[in-house]
Image (cartoon, rainbow, N blue to C red; front, side, top):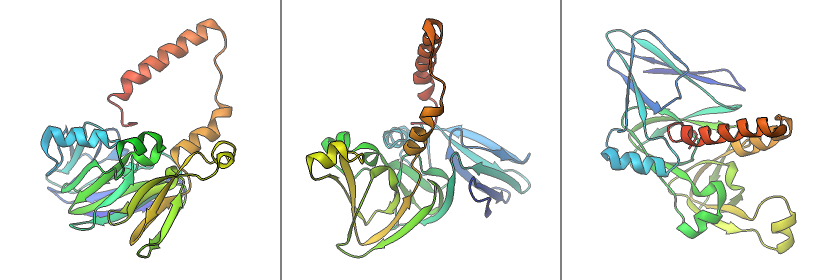
Amino acid sequence: MQSRIVGSTMPVLELLLEPGESVISEAGELSWMGQTIAMTTHTQMAGGGGFFGAIKRVAGGGTLFMTEYTAQGYPGEVAFAAKIPGHVVPLEIGPGHEIMIHRHGFLCATPQIQLGVGFQQSLGAGIFGGDGFLLQKVSGVGTAWLELGGEVVVRDLQPGETLRVHPGHVGAFQSCVSFQITRIQGIRNMFFGGDGIFLAALTGPGRVWLQTLPLSNLAHALEPYLPQNRGEGVRNVGTAAVLGGIVGSMFDNNR
């Protein structure tokens, strides 16, 4: 298997598969593929625990269905493009080298990679911890490609060294890094500082990948420029769209 990342601001990952080679992704990630590529959509991943493994994957923010792309007879190309401005990051996964990623971070992987729920915090802290609570765990053996928003900053934390991060800016980190949700100190800081109430505390040793453009920040920046509903008729259409979106999200890859 050969891979290359094309572009800068809106990159695309292109994979050249030899006959019999496969790559997996969550449903809806495909950008384009050659005529020798066969698609198979199912709920299982290799070593993923069958249907219960799929449920764990959904609990971590993933999709119920996965799609496997296989080159049949001849080499073939399959490509996955980034959904927002950012970077595609390849990581080698193996025993003792599992990775925790934010819930929108998985792009695709080789077949022996497993994707599941990876939170490291109690339920109570998770409910109040914001985006930092929903983490996916990437394990198994092989290569996984992640999608991180904006620029990527890599930090290698020493044993006992702690980095406090807004939860949305946590892109990925090695499983040996301790992850905790901490509260911002001071009433005025919490309610008037504009940075939220909670921060993610990452403690080494281990590597952390930070992203400068969380999806929530991009949505917030675009919100003032989106058309507002006007009138009862438009409001009804908007309500129907919301209801349709709720139903669609059950099958969509936007967890």
